[in-house]
Length: 165
Image 1 (cartoon, rainbow, N blue to C red):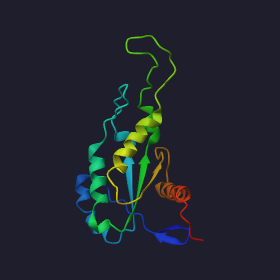
Image 2 (cartoon, helix red, strand yellow; image 1 turned 90 degrees about the horizontal axis):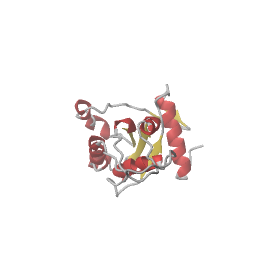
Image 3 (cartoon, rainbow, N blue to C red; image 1 turned 30 degrees about the vertical axis):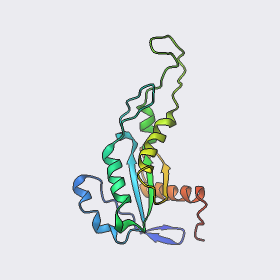
Image 4 (spheres, rainbow, N blue to C red; image 1 turned 180 degrees about the vertical axis):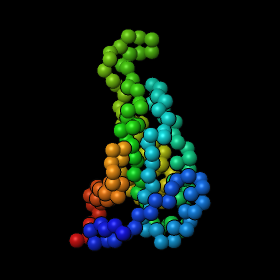
């Protein structure tokens, strides 16, 4: 059992494989907060000058199904976009030169643009509820639970949600 201020809660990692997802419905009834972790390293890093990114469609589909599930209609949703540094490492920086030209070596690509596009793919799936979100890197973290609590704190501050005292 974890504790967040005066609230006790249990974190259950139910796994994300197709086999595990069949068992998820056993947890829906008593869920008050669903934390959906998006592995940013899974997204294709194909860049063009238009900054198009191939989205991990399975993750988006699973999130969309969860957010529209009638049993979860009272649950709050949080998306943790994980492995931001892995996404950034795998993205090539674009050159300022026009196609076929010789340009500068300074990068002109806004690395946050692809992250924004990925976020939009998830957040645009849901229009009927507020989705809380946070971006982290758990690559070098040993304690997932403390990172989740830090994310909850950050989201609460950004959204001016009063924390229990």
